[in-house]
Length: 395
Image 1 (cartoon, rainbow, N blue to C red):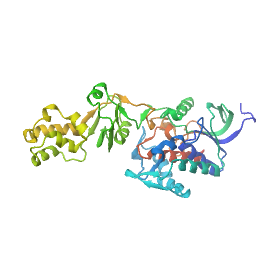
Image 2: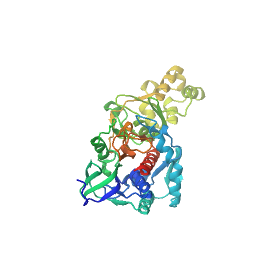
Image 3: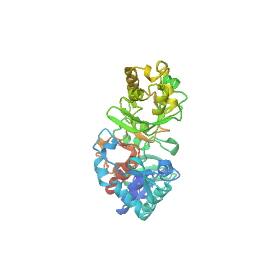
Image 4: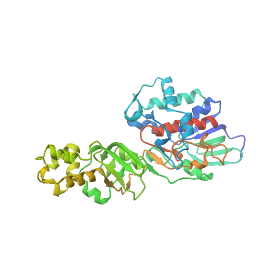
């Protein structure tokens, strides 16, 4: 089974994405003989499309509190070991220009291809081999790991599961890491699309048709999670940063609470009534919300006449409804539109310091494959860098 004809490596990394390439360059720099395998035709495909092609490569505010996981403490060790400042130092080494956007998000000034080129250059300098267009068919283990591929069999001391989750299948997502983890006895938490648009129920679709393209700042709340960013109406439901963020916290049949007036005082409508008693509520509301949305939400009973004719209680009740607008999604747009896979390989079966499987020496899992899901805004890339670095130091 472990014949001398098989090419042998110290570390074989399954997946040439962000986490896999970081792991490869780190392990290679330690003098390990490293091979990266991927069935895709090019490395870093998810990096290339991220951030509108400019790669939101990290977030300066990264801490454990920006991540969802069954064990919220698991990510702390890796995030402390490799920080946004560490990645920025690497970016600076390669003279990649960058800028900060809102909420601590860092982007390339130019193309995301600069980040992929940087990682590949580091891998080359560390003597890492990368084999693309090579489908991984099976992984078994005796004394060493044996990886069966369409390109032949390979032996390794260590195997790193770095092939991501199920999100964006058009880029080649297959769930390979989850299948192999289960094959070696590692647990999986519930897996579902994360950072994903939400779709309307038939009733909401009928009531809110014609609002596609309307955007506004809101605060979205689901359970203990709150996100204050922009929301966008689509032909099928709701999207925009606030909705993508809250989607990861949302569980089926739980309503999401949307505050459509997050920047206004509680008594804004009564205040406008006192200031402009002869104005109509439709016009006033159109100043606070996009007019198409105001028209869709305004009850006929309040739409006629002047503000002076409406009671303070009626205005307060209507405003309260805008501040606590219950949205119960019919579901999500699925993995095709999901930026990440929520859930994954159970962190209880991994070392938080090395990302190695507790009961399978030499088997590591990193990046999106693991049950650690970051907020929108560069956090998932920072998890990829940090978890890949931690595994690369140990593999």
